[in-house]
Image 1 (cartoon, rainbow, N blue to C red):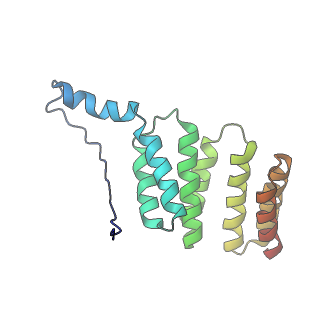
Image 2: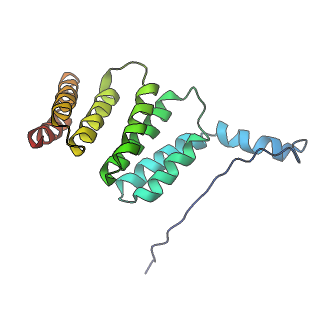
Image 3: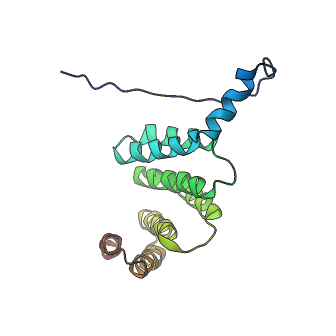
Length: 165
């Protein structure tokens, strides 16, 4: 019988000058970035969040930020949106709001499914904070966005949340 083994991985970036003339010291961190380690960490964080391990998901999300290029706005958006959902689910509404604001700063088009999910998150934060009018407004906007995109599942889920508001 196979045992469930939990594995953890920590990547750190340390600005050191010793050894930088050695090829391995110089190429290692750049090779990780080029190989897409930041995106891989984002994907892992999303899966950890879905599997019910919020602490590991938070750690993985935060770790990924150090490996994502500043121009990787979609991945950075996903990290902050994911953190916003995790913190909202845990009831830490200040942290949820902080990451929702950071996600909004990275979202360039202000349209599409990702934007509707962010508006949905804002509605959830407002609902949990007892700001019912703001929650109804945001959830209604998210539902309309999903309907325009032809996404009936998210329309139904947001409609249920809206009915609760």
